[in-house]
Image 1 (cartoon, rainbow, N blue to C red):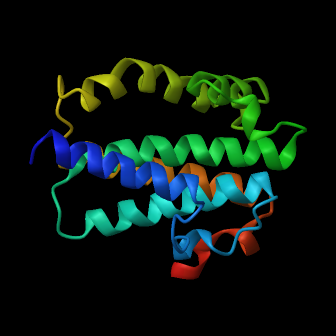
Image 2 (tube, one colour; image 1 turned 30 degrees about the vertical axis):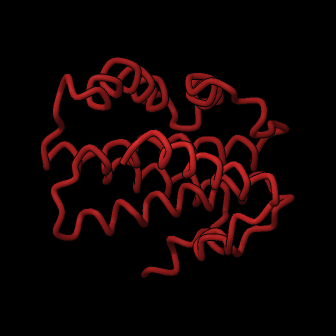
Length: 170
């Protein structure tokens, strides 16, 4: 593959966006109303968690499970903030803003869950992403379990079970 193929692939992607012809929406996201900011974040979190569930079955792609778990946690936090406050997704340009806002609202009581995850994310996520540290199976599974627990806790707290596609898998 040469430079011409790279340029052609880039031009194709740009043209699809320009023509607003990106293709059918992902099934797990198609139920969302485009104008409901909270549901968009909820749907993204559900889709990431479903991908983690699929990756756990017979794969050793632990880096992807860890990365998707961090993303699902952040999307779940953002869902909660948009759903339960006057916030909008656009209010959260930087990752740490989501974690800080969750921490300020004391959603997890005095356990400082958001602060602990943010400290962990800022210290370790880049190390995994850039392959300085390599997450093993146990850590990847623990991160996915954490993401699932946080997601379900916030969905329950927001009384949004009927809108969470994770409930469909049970």
